Length: 410
Image (cartoon, rainbow, N blue to C red):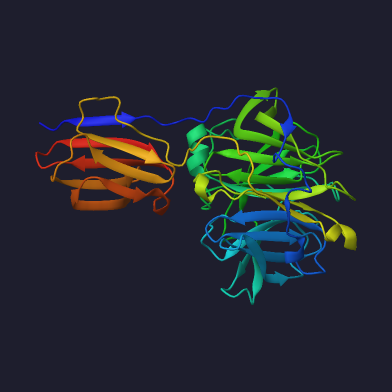
C-alpha cells in the first residue's frame, strides 16, 4: 500500500499598515546621480523599468525617446547601450518577459498600450502592436494630458494566489488573452489604477478587468516586485508619495479600492522642479541581487537634466519572499524526506542521509513536467527560476514505492 504525505503550506503575504515615513531612506543628494550616463540631449524622462535578468535599466521620455543603461557590477556603474527617438509619447515602460527582446509602453497622448520589439544590437526598435484604451471594451475617456502614465505587468501566478477581483465583474479573475497576466496602468486623472487583459499578438484585442481607487487623486507610475507580490504606486501631485499595495481590494458601493499597506514620502530633488515622474525598483529577493530603486524627473532645462536620474542603493524594501512560498514537512515529523527553500532555491533532503536513489518529479498543476530524474541521490538542490510560475507538485518515490508529495508555489 502506498503512503502519500501531502504538505500544503502556502505562505500568504501579510503586512501591517503604517504611517508615512521617508523612502528610499536617504536624501536625493546622497543617491547616485546617473544623469551623465544619458545622452546630453535626453529630456523629459518619465518612465523606468529594471530588468533583473540582464541588469539593464530601461528609460523612456514622453518626447518620444528610449534609452537603455547597462550596469557593470564590477565597477558599480552604468553605461549607455542604446538610444532611440520617435517611439511616440511614452510615459511608462515595462516588460512582460525579461528574457524577450520586447517592451511595452503606455502612450499618454494616444491613450495606447504599445508593444515594441528590438533586435539584439538594438539597431531596429519597432512598434509591432497597440491597444487603444479609448475604444470598447475600455470605459476610459479622454481627459487630455491627464491620462494614463504608468504601466506594469503582474503574472497570473500571483493574481491567482490572492484571488484578485475584477471590479468589472466582481469575480475572481485570471487572464484569458494569452499574456499570462494583466497589465496595470496608473492614471493621472483621479489616481486610479486600471487593469487590462491584453492579447499580445493581436492589435486592439483586450478586455477591461477593473478600475481601482488608490490613496491619492493622481498616479504617475507603477512597479511590481514579483518576489514579494507588492505593487508600488507613485503619486506626484504637490509632493511625491509612494503607495504600497498587495493588490487585494475592498469595495464600497461600486468603488473598488486597493488595500494600502504603507505610504512613504519621497525626498524632493535638491533644486529645481520637485516633480518625480517615474521610478523602477529591483526585486527584493534574492537579497544578494537587490540593487535598489531609481527615480527620474520629467525636466527640460540643462541644469535640471544634469540631475534627472538618481539611483538609491541600498534601500529598504517591503514584503516577504513569495517566489518560493512552501513547504515544509512539519505536518509529519516522522517523514524521512523534507523540503526547504531559501529565496529562489529548492532543497530536497533526507532526515537520515543515505545512498538510496529516489525517483523525483516536479509538475505544474496542468500536468507539465518541469523536472524528472529516476535515479537521484539526496540532497538535491534546484534553482526555481527555471520553472513555471504558479502552483507545482513534487513527487518523490523511494525504492520501497513509498511516495512523498509536496505542494508549493513559485
